[in-house]
Image 1: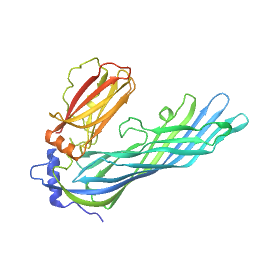
Image 2: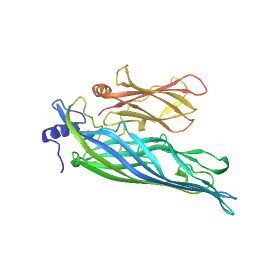
Image 3: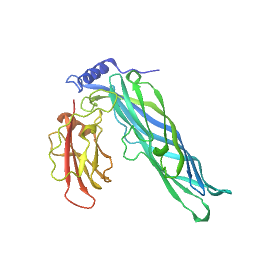
Amino acid sequence: MRTRTPLAALAATLAALALGAPTAGAAEATRIDYAVTIEGTADYNRADVDAEASAQHDETIDFRTAIPRLSFIGNAAEDSTGALGTASVRRGSFTMTGPSGIFLHCSSHTLVDTTGGGLDATFAPDKTVFATRVLDAFKIQVGGCPNGLGPWEYTFGSGADPVGVGIFDGTFSVPHSRIGEAEMTFPLKGEVTGSSCPNHHFNTALCSLTWEATVTFKRTGEGVVDDEVAPVPIEPQPAEPAPRHEPAPPAEHDDLIVPIVAKASLAPSLARASVPFTCEAACRGTLIATARGKAKPLARATFSAAASRAARVTVRFDRADKRAIRRARGVRLTLTATAVKGGAPDRRSLVLRLR
């Protein structure tokens, strides 16, 4: 049975969304809470070949990401927070074969580190689109090899890739008409092969990573919130919205850090903001967020980046930060970077406005 949002709250929410911000008369909005799980299996197969021997590495991983609460306030969804990830090796094999057959077999395959995934919500007029990371990263330690070989570790993960384009990422949509159902499930799957496959080497002849997962929403409660905490959808569209921004000020020093302003983003729920960037030399630094036109920092994050490699840094906002951003109708993001080898800091800033 499906429980629908009360009509009065729904009407108020739709009116607010049509204007891109809560209206003065919208005192309350309905909040529907879900617990979300992402469960699935990944298969990894890689074959390396050289003139004298070949190596075959196979792993089957069962994984689970649990998000304790994800709320829809009216039709606007919050991004996920507090995700916990677990994984286990169902089957693992590493063998090396020479002219006379298999001469090495490693019997131990252990997961030593797991980071859960999550969901990034983007508002559209009739649905919410969730960019989904089913699992962020894990490491497998291979051991139990003869002759004192090993152990060693393999890392699998999406690195600094934004959610939606990583190796464990997919996308699904929740029609707004389904918000309030007791349970919703959505299948996802993905595959990477060739040089994009994790741990691909110069002598890799075959490599594939495939995964399948199911995202399950189970309703856990509901309530009402006032318009001070209701998410503000940014320009409705099925992809992450392009921010309106103010030009960065003139550089104080040579261009060490270059923010990719057109791809900076502020989540519709105001839960986070991120800026992609490159550094001309290996760098480290901070991202500081302030409400537009204000001086007091709301949030900060540190980062490090290799030379000339695309990177992204993200800050996250709590409820008080979101209220400040709503009142200011935007957030200023200031990147400050210093070259690892030393030198004067370089600073860039931009403003993301609410529409």
